[in-house]
Image (tube, rainbow, N blue to C red; front, side):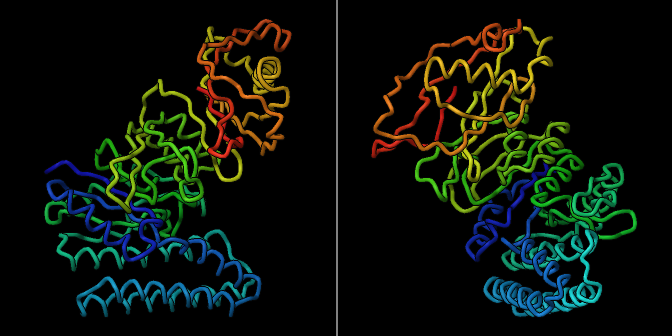
Length: 429
């Protein structure tokens, strides 16, 4: 059998008709290999389903049903505009209507009990992936793709921690070997949904919001693949959200540790549990655009020496700083407070007395630092010349105790916009 590739398409890609067509064009390029496709629900489906459950539990059944009506109409719109074969189109519409009836019954029960338990939330939210899978399968099939559909809830087994379930890998691997691998003898493509699974009682579970990438990693490990390609709405991880920032830089490579830290602290493109899983299984993660033909991508792997970078996450500006400690035996002694004191003292003396920051996390030799909103009087800020020299911060003077030195290499502490004003970006290299 040819080598199997794992491709994951996010809900941001499958948010409109063009996204589905882009997915079709992308997978056609993999005609010489076997492909496992993992998809997320159409954008915002999961959050709307969850909101409907919350409204129903608060006695607002009508409002919850209105949300579902709008969601179902959106799915039917996709069916009517993507499925060109009349037979398949009618089948799809009937499947979507059946899902609507099931969701309505769920909401009525929630409204009666005035409670939506984690187990019920999981079942309710699973319909987004379920309906998207139905549409994606038929869309690809009618466009000539030799493809079979698999329901992940019958394949991936987890514990019963609803909302944040953990995979039971031995049973899951057995299911994949017995029910998916044989299908590649007949089909070139297998498509399954991410995010959802089931426990040993066959109750629907989910593995956490944004966990479709974890599903892809699970399939990758069990199918003996050494990488997954995640297609999203941006061409790789960048130093800031390109939707809201005109100037961003591509971060071409990340170590697992770096990726875990920025994912843990708010970058939605990265699901930390998936990174941990990928690291243990030695699975390379490639993040690419599913909306254009850009060759740009971010590769997450076990490379150890990858340069630090700054990245803007949501409302705060965070940057990752590499800390080189001469004596690794003393790493445990370097608390966040001590590191913060050392950096603060050095920057206050050499650069800017009001330079304020806080340490978010420390992982081995990496330190994730957040910079709060910084609004200086632009007219009083003196230009800071670039400095590329390696600078040593002495812990003796910094924290009044004899710890090992920390070495930083920094440049361009302030980044100037074209209008001369200071941006919130701080480059430490």
